[in-house]
Length: 379
Ligand code: GDP
Ligand code: MN
Image (cartoon, rainbow, N blue to C red; front, side):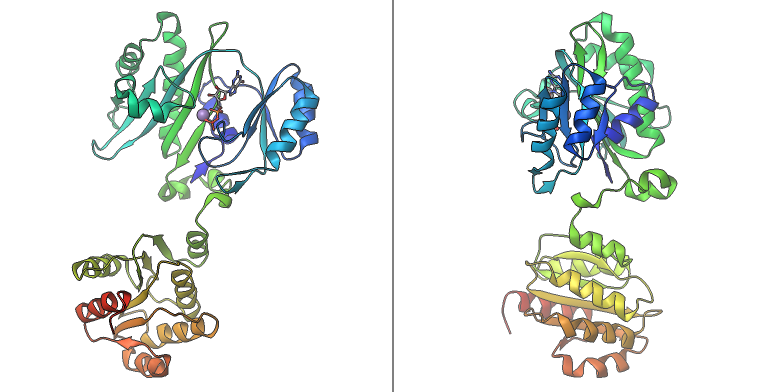
């Protein structure tokens, strides 16, 4: 789950990271008021869950309340990479001497968190990573020990940070680490971490991603979820208690059980096809749940065939069949549908589906082969 800049920065501040003392606004008027209170120059920033706002025109400097109001008006009417801007952050403008990148994420390959820093921070950090990778310093953190003083010294030396800033950089990096660890984040990033004209360090931008699997431990954060940046099909799936992950292939899959879903995807690949999704309807799924799942699968334009692999145990074949028939009342799939249905009430299920014009198969291998052929247009 991604967190907005203003929330990320508030969390960082709780762990001792200095941030500009701004506020969020939902209307231009409000933005003007905040600017007036702050006094002097301000920066008005779109709060959207995508990177590169600055380059897209979502970050504007303003000389006073009037300009801030106008900037907010422009930004609140924008779409950035397809996402509407609903809030802006109004921060006091900062005099920037240089921009540092500082981020923490999990390095899956190394099975450890890694702190990444660069003296060439700011909006072009991706470009730096591509053209001058030696300017990006990585220090792995032992997850049992946490960030140690020597880890942070290695970073300071690596980015050739002036000695005068070591103490401040140390405090910020430690704070960012604590925020990352305590909130079960998979990303905590400050870009830019600026050195101001008078030599102070300040986090101007902030970004945090929280591990979805840990949200049960962070009820307060879970409440802040902004659904606008999420895949509509995945949202719909979550609402219906389905586990759905969209993939790039052309064979839609509906399966009961995560392990069975993995096996189904493997066997589709074995016979030369590509799964369009991972979908686990879970045990004992109701007809409504099955219907929702089928609608979600068919909302993917890439789907050329749908494979149902249902191994009835707690899940009942007749219930699954009723769900399919229910969904077929309002969705008229052009894609051929192949079903392998075995186990509890499979007979009853098959009888119900007799007039649904589905291709049936006895074994998973046969079903997968038929699905691959159907997706390729072979009868
Ligand atoms: P991003 O484009 O989404 O990463 O948005 P940022 O918050 O990182 O802002 C992009 C860039 O705008 C920064 O790298 C700065 O160069 C510039 N910027 C942001 N805030 C200020 C500010 O208060 N003063 C000045 N001079 N520049 C700023
Ligand atoms: Mn940034």
